[in-house]
Amino acid sequence: MRVSVPVLALSWALSGALCSALSSGVAMAEEPAVGPPAEVKALAGCWSGEGAVMGKPVTIALAVKPVAGDAMMLVEADSHAKADPADAYAAHLLFGGRTTKAGEPVAIVGLWADSFGGDGASLGTGAVAADGFEVAYPYGRSSFVNRWSHKADKLSWSIVMRDAAGKEQGFAAYDLVRTACAKGR
Image 1 (spheres, rainbow, N blue to C red):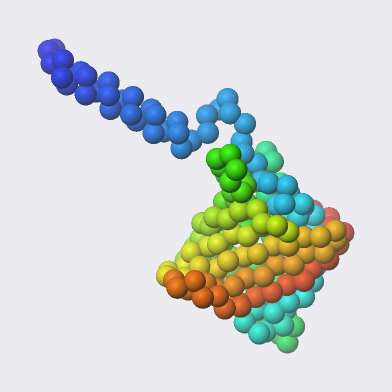
Image 2 (spheres, rainbow, N blue to C red; image 1 turned 135 degrees about the vertical axis):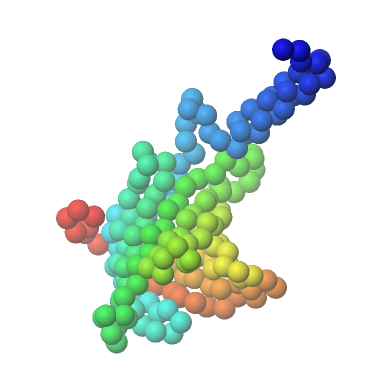
């Protein structure tokens, strides 16, 4: 089989470019995973509290634990409307760290999945903030910005809807305290 030099050179160039592209975006087996930042890891354990979603009073419970070999943190959230306990909602949030350049805030990647199914799932990005962290999840032309603030055994979690112009409107807010975890959580 005859292969011309230009075709062979192009083949080598493309394979080199492909290897470079793949290795720049994918952690290699020898590299340690970028785990969640300390601000996210601090949520480990169980929490309970109250809040409001679109003005509706709710109770909420969180169970937070490391998963995937400690490379990610899983938040399992369960809430119920105070006026109607059958009005329930569940969400699973997955947080991990992202590699950043020197001098940049620690980056966070988040996955939101909830009881609305696959159409409600969203991949978000965020960063460490002064007293916690925030992650924004895009939905259409808007995004839902989740802000987490933790101090001792108290946790505040608020969600605002930010439109394309940057205007924010409150969506949900919770105040929680650390509690003992139920067996199996």
